[in-house]
Image (cartoon, rainbow, N blue to C red; front, side, top):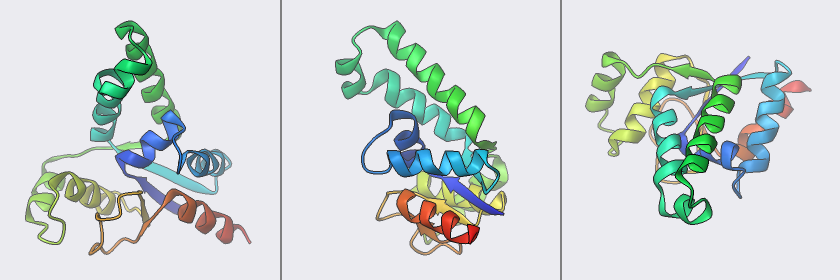
Amino acid sequence: MTRLFLDTNALLDLVLDRTPGGAAMQGLVTMARAGYCTLLTPSLALKDLSYVITESPTAKEAMPDRRERMEAAAAARELAFETCEICDVDEMVCRRAHANDDEPDYDDALVAECAVANGANVIVSRDRKAFKAMEIPKLSPDQALKLVRTRLR
């Protein structure tokens, strides 16, 4: 079964239904719920997700009431819990990311090494600069959805 490791931006596409990526992420969730793939994400992505929804200027403008933002963040985390395996970012992952010379951005190296440690087949991300030298291929949400659909045939 295809194990798709969601970068933070892909997870944000899902919970915020952002364009581009949101529709494809919803499709991947449907495929995962039907048992055609497994979605994974690093535990750190939940922290980033919460921050973007509660503290970003865009969120504050869209939802001036802090309580409303907190409830939206809780709902987003709940969606992640329901749809993804949440993967630990432990000392081994941190050390491997630290030693990863191919990935200059430490946050991206953490995601990449967490994906490797958890047996992911693909990293799903819209970040064009990240994950270029990894042993695991990176696909956009649209590409990942096409991959899962192709494997159904």
